[in-house]
Length: 266
Image 1 (cartoon, rainbow, N blue to C red):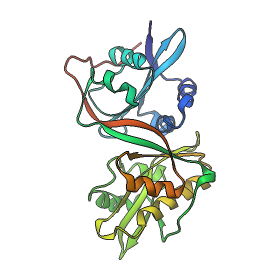
Image 2: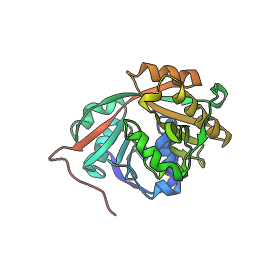
Image 3: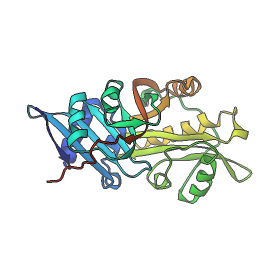
Image 4: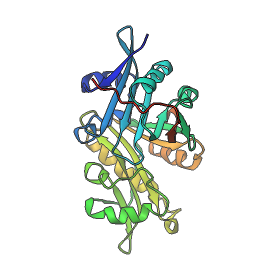
């Protein structure tokens, strides 16, 4: 028998997320104050023990829905507690069949979670510049060419971004989706190079600069997501010291007709 409900206690949430810290790294980062206010958490317990957790994060568009734990427990959460209409879903492969009872995926994207341990970092030097909020306009212009799908200007002041300029134009950038200094986690992303400047190693250089700064700040677990079919990017990240950690599935999805729009209230 499952007992479901919402969660607001950070220590209780963190204790569960730490059972698979690297898969849950993004969710752990969302415990930081500026992100926690945009987060809704739900749990499923069995015999007094939490065995499944869902996070709905509204700081992105579409909002993110992260699922972790026992498949039947997650089913109970989606039935009784938390089943938002339009989301960008992240789950493990074993959850996929169950989720299809609640959501129609636009596409399911097989991904790798990769992790960098500080001792494994192999830096690549480059003429990179730390980016600030003053550069968000140029970042948006660069990403409009086909990158930064999960970019938000609010990530810049709270994160770490580096870029390379040519003639005053930002032509390559890398950054973070989140930085959780309280919990020692960060997620690298928003890596993109202008099509006219590819093949020069700029993506590797900017990513290396971001990693060096994160490690200087004392972040002990740096993760990133990469498509399983993107062999070229995987090789680049491995050269910097990243290792494959676990496969998962992500993609945009819409709640099926008949699934309830629920958010449990006390």
